[in-house]
Image (cartoon, rainbow, N blue to C red; front, side):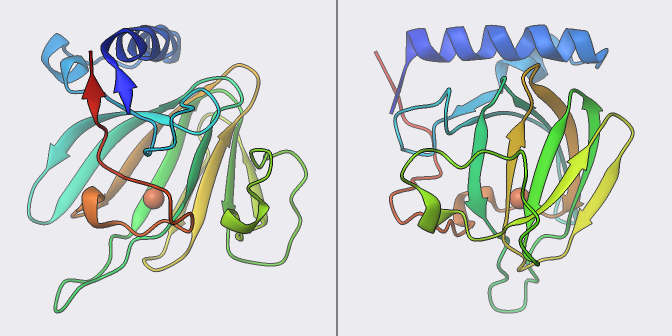
Length: 180
Ligand SMILES: [Fe+2]
């Protein structure tokens, strides 16, 4: 649950980083920003600011902003029935960005929020800078962490059904609930 005041604060900070990254977004696009706390109630530690740009039956594109040292919880993109899971390409635009995916543990910088080790099982860390691009196959667990200046990235993918994405942490509620 996010209060309206928290939403305002988080989106203002995210907008600053979007400007620093030199990404052009319209006022209407910025209005759609999701300040996700993933139902965990501590968005500056575990959260992400997500601006949906394109959603068709085949593709999706988002700008994702992580505040300094913010972590987006581990999840994967599962298929259902005939619909394959989302294949997601991340391109970093600003900041130092740590992407952890399944693989041998080489993690050095990406911080797991305190007491949450069991919910961050993907430990192969990619250290990424502006211009770096990585594609995450569907079904692969992944999570994100930003360096001390925050990070801005594009997520370009096959069709997204964000609300249905499974997360490793059973406490996650993907749809952001806004309250007074
Ligand atoms: Fe993802």
